Image (cartoon, rainbow, N blue to C red; front, top):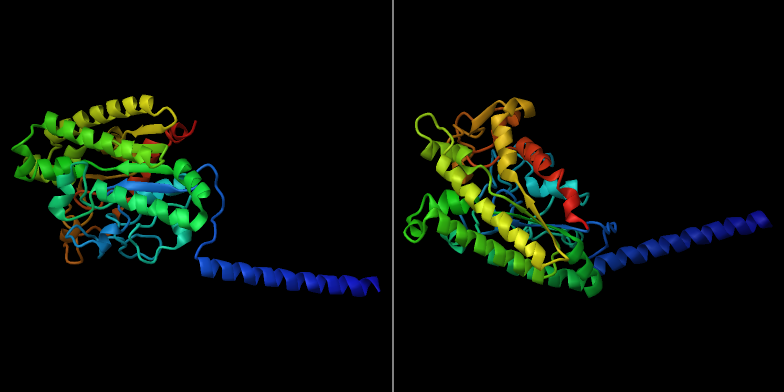
Length: 368
């Protein structure tokens, strides 16, 4: 008799569990969301910036600043295809999201197939070609920082609707925010177009950039962000395209561009220090990509690189975006020895090395 009842109880338990699973499935389907694993330390990674951290937003923008075609994405682990990332594979957005234990790929916010689950664990709002200077994005018809901020407000509303205001507030306050932008201001808007040079010298232009950076960080704080990392400008004068246009026949690093980067970085560091005092409950982390990339360029063998002054795509001297395409002649067969993928953006391997150099000793600074 006991065996009979035990058997029937077991059968009923299985039926109940099956029905519960069906109800959960229906609930998820109807309401469009199932909560991800509750990582209270870092629920999401949210990124703002330019092509260094754009994971595909420009695919959905009417602009020439695109890379959703080969050979971009050639070494992308999830299918070896172009994704809108300005590299042969992953970009810092993805690498940072994984470093913080959130997820392996950070999707672009504008992806129409973005799931609610993906939304809750973070996205990239970055747009290739954007800058601190609003004119930078305007010149190439991409999403400015103010546009990205408006999308973030929309994002907050979406997660409010998905999980409720209390949970949403927690996600916003405990997420990691990464800002990586500004290179195009110096390399393109100031150096390659006449508009800003007629109004500013480099000291005053970097003042403008630093002021815009401060305004953006203040707005981000007002919206609830508390853990914010900001990348410094890299050693711009040593990027292949800058060597080509300003480095002479030997294609040396361009000192004036490097000086401009360092000048802005000093102002950014100072402004972030002041904001840190003003917003005592925030963690503002300066991420020194300038010296990180310089270290790699000066000591390539230490990190397994051989080619430092040109990219893998085509000649590696000028090819970037639409100029780096399936018809680019002499594209390298193995990018692992190259720091740069095209004339402006590093390879996935270089991004991994750089992210480790810049972030590994800084991760603790994001937390109290």
